[in-house]
Length: 126
Image (tube, rainbow, N blue to C red):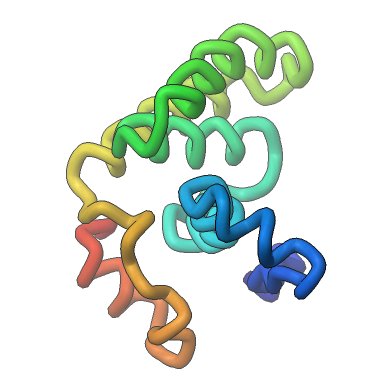
């Protein structure tokens, strides 16, 4: 996360009530950047589609599956120089999503100090 200048998301007190009403969206928002790191996807369009493909394959929500369909159409147009990476990461994200444990329910907050390779192994991401 440090290499990509990502930080764990903290919910402000002002947004807590809104967040409690939509726990799925909150959990996905909080874990999205963590997924980038665990899945080894950067934050380019190619990296984003990898994370999206993973989440859609793990069947987190219908809206993510729709978003993936749109991303497959739009990302190559928005970043034509990344087309090869977009389609490679699409396949990699789907493959990881099929073999990994259900990541959305994993308590990452309790494992910050563990080596990332240990966490990846435990979650079936190697």
